[in-house]
Length: 86
Image 1 (spheres, rainbow, N blue to C red):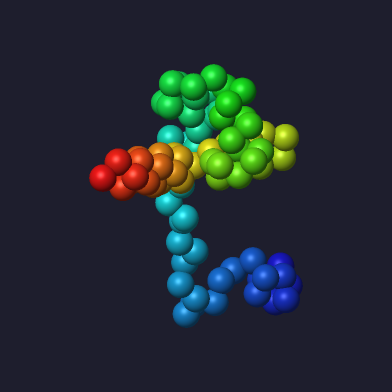
Image 2 (cartoon, one colour):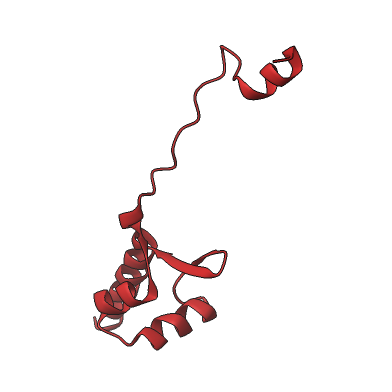
């Protein structure tokens, strides 16, 4: 292997190893899984994703929702409702 190729493949000794982002398969949800969690139709979840109500991630042809982001949206909505009721 040439020295140039080796420099592109092997990290320098002082470079820290790449850190994983921390997402696992269980963190990614399909529209059907989100619909089940929220007890709403799948079409509603898809509409919320398209309109930006629920953040979504497009992976090629597939759309996934990140569980923590879905939970955050639900909790914010619950906080707004609690604040409006007082």
